[in-house]
Image (cartoon, rainbow, N blue to C red):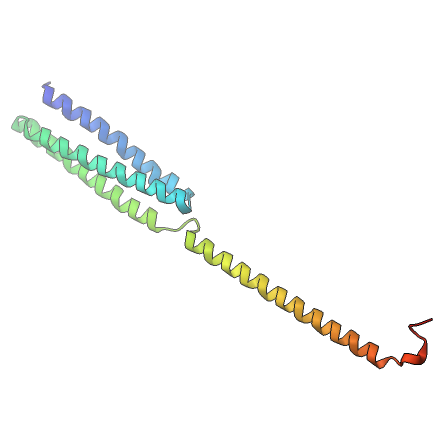
Length: 152
């Protein structure tokens, strides 16, 4: 085995490791997160995809230095790696677009709705208190002052 193919195998190993890491983030980590944590993980996954892209570039350069018989065999592998990476890119796009967890905007809207609901309840309570006060004042006005009912 030549030194060039050993280098190719090293790149293959690196690519397989990073693609497993990307896949784990897409399938497990990102769907379980929300908000800023989710954004950070998506950005980290995007960086790993860029790194995987670079590894494929290195593999392509290495293939060019090999003998034609070995080159043909490895070019088929390269097509599979490129296909895998494209699928990971699509999966990341879907995973980052899916909102399994609430977004910052959703959380803000929910907070705003709760505040508005609380304000409505406070206004209703205030209206009832004023109504009760008015009724109480009317009852006191209706009681004759000289009856001695309230004053003994």
